[in-house]
Image 1 (spheres, rainbow, N blue to C red):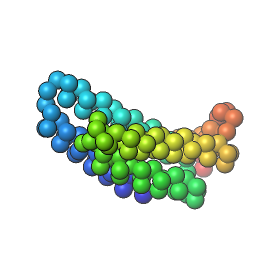
Image 2 (cartoon, helix red, strand yellow):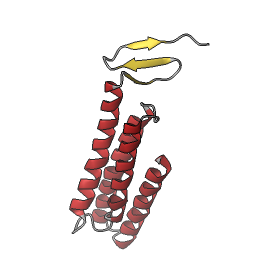
Image 3 (cartoon, rainbow, N blue to C red):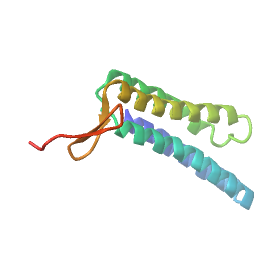
Image 4 (cartoon, one colour):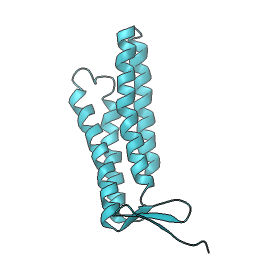
Length: 133
């Protein structure tokens, strides 16, 4: 599922290039950079959230599916984001950000999030360390 999420963002970036080619003026570059940031922030936030939890939960998989489905119209509306596609772009970005927050919230309700190097973070924010086996 994560691959399709990433591919939909690659599609969005290709649409950014098309937008940049159509309007290479300084204001056009500024608008394209703003759209890039608005695509990049939900992508990184969702990935950071998703990497913090185990992907084996049915709920987490559902959040992945919803975020992936929301990212497709976001990519398709990049070219028209400053015109008629603005609401679609904004709503899709908000859904992806929301799914990232729900993913982390789901981890907290399940008792913890995945940590690295034998540690885990509990829902109260304290660290526990497991001894290596």
